[in-house]
Image (cartoon, rainbow, N blue to C red; front, side):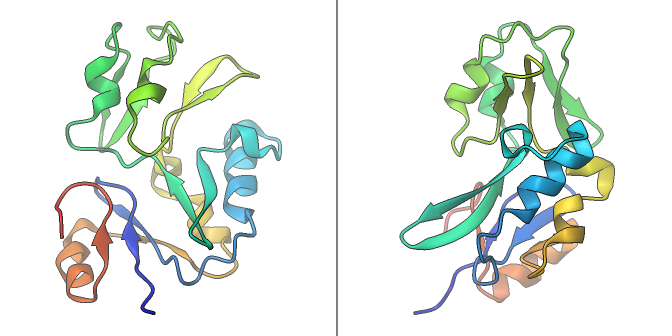
Length: 161
């Protein structure tokens, strides 16, 4: 059975997840929470390893083109900053509507710090990419997408196969 790869972030650059390489070790979760919050706590991670049909792979915010989280926010607290969609903590009222409409669970509530969190690509230097022991997460420029499609990489959000 052929393993399928997914492009998980719809922005420039892209994070590509090589599902066949992920061993479910959760290193990506630990390094994410450590780099953002200063502690190892998977609940504070912006990336989460999930299991589906016996496979494990990380998921994170897709940075959707027409992001439902941004559209539903009553305070207009979610907006693009550069190539990343962020949550303005000063505007956000923590209604969690964004978490309800996110198609993959990429917007999360940080109950410890009382704020909404999502993948921000670590400012262009994603720690999950750097520390994944299996190199299951890769940061690629947007012009790599056509070549990825030729190799059979599916886009998880956006164009349908």
